[in-house]
Image (cartoon, rainbow, N blue to C red; front, top):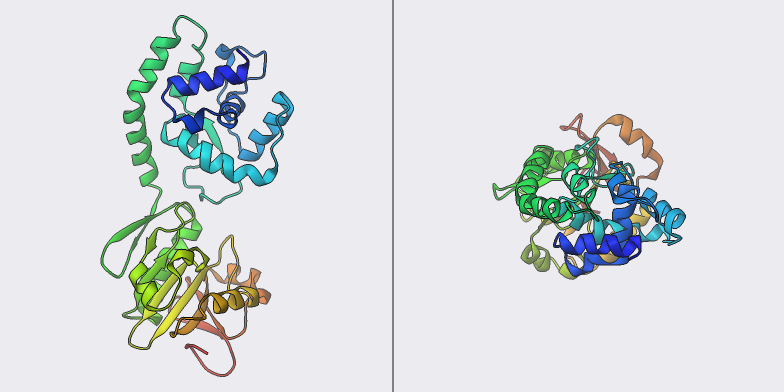
Length: 310
């Protein structure tokens, strides 16, 4: 068998689903283990790799070239399942690193590395069975460790959601808990996205009642609140790695919400004044700015009135 076929067999024997036994998955495993065509399995390594590094390895070691725009395929259809099966650790060097960080990296778990070093030897079956029998325990330990890094946010119905680690989630939590209480008291949360789980919280009946296409709610900004008393819809962008409400973004949202009768209030939220200054020239007129380090004040990009729809 070729090295790729061997890697596919390893994935099959540890019980990976059929879709994660394909060539892309096998090459990902070989890249993470630094196994070239003639490198024996006993010399497998554990090293940190971004998905960009995996693509580079595939091209250089196996002459399998994948375009940079396929990185999402590797992340969603390989790494996510590898992580769940405890084949890899995500960001073992910094578990608190945001999901959408360009520095996100992966490495084989020490338990899986120990097992695959036995592949091709008499000890492989025993090592494989030991790893498979421990997968559930390893998964539970991993989930507990990552749960500690998550950002809790209490929503209007009293429940607590867990956001992915990172500044973006910290800002979203402040929007829901601090901005809303100060400038949208009594408003209901209709939508809250997440860097790892885009549709973390969606009130579909609430969105439908306002004429918002629920089949396209991924077009919404990070946080959507609705004040039924004033009939105001707050559309809040958490500007960290991604930007604020720009003229282009505002125009897109206006088109998207053309059937929504509620008055729209566009808000760009920032963690600090330093972050705000980076995006100063990009913010659309007739929108609002809220800065978390001074939560009781707002900056009004309008000139004709304070907070409210136009």
